[in-house]
Image (cartoon, rainbow, N blue to C red; front, side, top):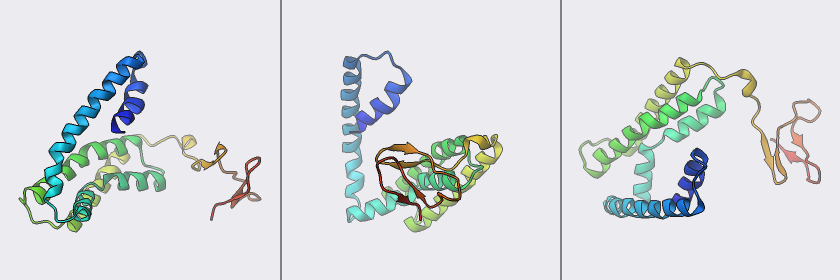
Length: 176
């Protein structure tokens, strides 16, 4: 599953000269790599009393995607550089915090406090980098397109159609 994601989303899109045989070989190698990582990570999971406790703790330290997602949706000044560098810079900090606190017991910060710390670090990083880079072109920032079973279609901005949208052959969709 993960190898298909890497091959289809990253390798195929970056270099198009791979044959199907080469892509299959890369995918098989990635399956092996991911299996080794899973085997190496399994003892970390066993160190927790329950799987839910592990998930809560781990996700508490790795909250950066939430900040980037919400910031990208609701803040028109957000930039892709801010999102990218927030994920690149703060994710290793979260992983280091998880490993040092929850796995090795080097600090006693409870995971809920760690979640707040990571959110604040992510917000500071995202806002600072977004403000230091050129603002996105306002023409590219429009209402997010809406989706339906019949394809992608942007919302109508006319007052008469506000609140509902129809696509040929489909019932109106309510936007409340």
